[in-house]
Every structure is written in C-alpha cells, then in structure tokens.
Length: 285
Image (cartoon, rainbow, N blue to C red; front, top):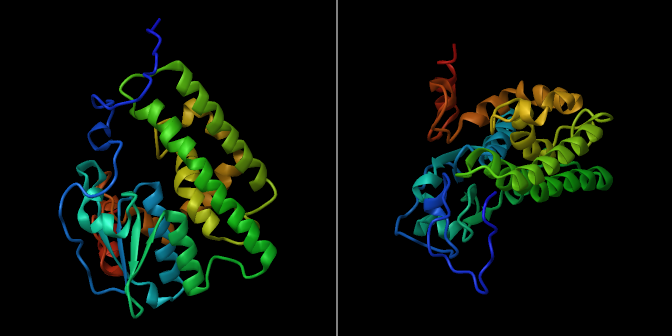
C-alpha cells in the first residue's frame, strides 16, 4: 500500500511532478523566452499542433475550403509544446494562456487574435456563414454540444489520458475515477447519436468538428491505446458516427496539418497551401 499523501498548509512547487510533460508544467504563466512568430501571406495565420484541440481548427478550415471559401486560406505554423514553443513572447501575445491552437486574422484593418479552440470554431463559423445553423433552436443545440465538449474533454484528456497513458506511475483511484467519467460521457454521446445522424441533429456542424478529434479518435483507437480497456465497441452509435466523419476528405486533410509523428503520409509540420497537403497524402500507400 502506498503511503498516504498529506497536503501542505500552503502548496509550493519544489520539484517537477514527473510524467511526459513535466518539464513544461509550472504554476506561473507568461513569456519564458523571446521569439517572434512568423507571418505568412494567407489571411489566416494558425499556430498549432495536431493534438485533438489543434485538429478541430484545421478540420474546420479544410471544410471551409472544401466549400469553396477561398477567404479561409491559411498558413499553419508548428508550435512544439514539448519544447515550450507556446511560452515564446510571440505566442503569448496571441494567447496569454499559452495553449494551442491560436489564430490571427489579418483580413481586416487590424489583426484579430482568437484563442481557445471553441472560440476559433465559432469565430470562423460566424465569419464565413457555414457549419452553424441560423435557426435559433438548431443553433442553440449546436452550441449546447460545443460547450459540452469544452467542459467534458478535460476529463478525457487531462484526467483519463493523463493518468492512464502519461503519468509516471499508475494509481487505481484516478484511473478508476476518470475511466468511469469517460465511459459516462461516451454513453451520453451514444444516446444522442442513436436518434441523430450528427451530434447536434441531422446537420454536420462545428459541434462534430469539436467532438470528433477527441471522442471519435478515442473509439477509433487513435489516442491513448485504450479502446479495449474502455470497451469502445459497445458504443455502437458513436462508432458509426466516428467512422462516418473519418471518411470526409476535409477531415483527412485537417488531421495531418501540424503533425510531426506517425507515418510519413500523416505528417505535415507546416501548411501554406492546399498543395502542401496534396503532396503529403500522395505518399499514402
């Protein structure tokens, strides 16, 4: 039996807490080094990494381009969070929270910074008039699920994903606690999708783009190597939806942007035009 931990009266950080991301975790925010961000020629400048949160935005941008919205052209620059790129002066200027993704819109008179993935999805949907219904009831339902994701995903990622896949030691209590919550969330989605083709109804929306990189990737076995442990095959409606979304061309394209791991045809560190993605996908066997 492990020794019981007794919290101090006042917490102080006296050592790294271990795990894969220990070197970047601190209790303070702000700039750690000086570095200006590059600015490309496209109207939208994205600084990100192909984690689930980063994929939300690149999928949205590729979906817009697939609809012929040329104004959604973008440069995507890699932010290596393992190396602490998110703490550069340039990145902190556009996101004081130092989390990917962050977007700057240069199409107007003055640049507009947008951070937090849900905020970026909403901004793009409203700017270009796609993937967010105009009808008040349908719009509200879409927003319900967008905000559901923002509140739920930390339990999957920072909770289950951390303690099951990344923590330096595996402890029964946190794994059980966050496994239970993850399965509850999957059950919520499964029941919703039992009567709806897409998350918020019968129309593909930013709710799907937000939720799929987390929960779709989870049930397809693409994150945390936990599909069997979570018995994801039992969530038949989530499985149907996840596979359906995965076949969309824009989803396939958006997944590889700012990705530096996996097969060669899955990796595109930076994206500056559609041809960049085309060249990478040609390598797929």
